[in-house]
Length: 249
Ligand SMILES: C[S@@+](CC[C@H](N)C(=O)[O-])C[C@H]1O[C@@H](n2cnc3c(N)ncnc32)[C@H](O)[C@@H]1O
Image (cartoon, rainbow, N blue to C red):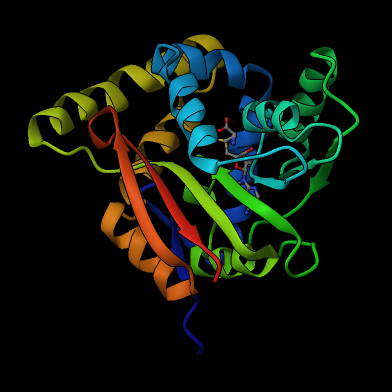
């Protein structure tokens, strides 16, 4: 009998073809309260991580930007203002609940015109080769089943000379910080999730998926393996989060 391919969903082993559905369940459940929880969980610091990402993107008026797993659109909103009327931003996400919350929020903020919305899987991006100056994925790659496939797809849609930015939870730089962070993630996070969204499990998945995600050096190696050049990373908040950068030749 052929062996079933397995992958992880947090700490749980699941069939490869089951993972996307399980991830979808998490984001359908949290979509409405996603922004509130982000502010609560990070004490607002996620805004600084995102601002740093925008600065590292070297975005200019007229650029084409793809914000993969863009969810409720924080990066897209900032890019939209910076690329101006001659540029464009695509907010892409696999989850229609997250995409809807993002689209409504951006419209409420008067952001339209240069933003398009796309229900898209990072592993099979539905865009032509060499389409974008900048591709970003913030707190999304962790949830993708085949990260190598997704990285190759991102490389394909980037223009030559374009850059990929991956903002993601990563490995704390010291054992002391890791210990405090573990306490926070496995005790406080699910408790807050239960209180605010009545969903402790999704926030337990968040903590577990962070631990299962490749560390800084491993992810850099995966980017190089996918074909990105001049890859580097920058740790923030003691390595709790890292921004990886790579270029298409
Ligand atoms: C933690 S949220 C991040 C949202 C936003 N980028 C931010 O930083 O606030 C993760 C997002 O990844 C999306 N996602 C998960 N798997 C995906 C995939 N295979 N392709 C595209 N998006 C995916 C989820 O639907 C969710 O909106």
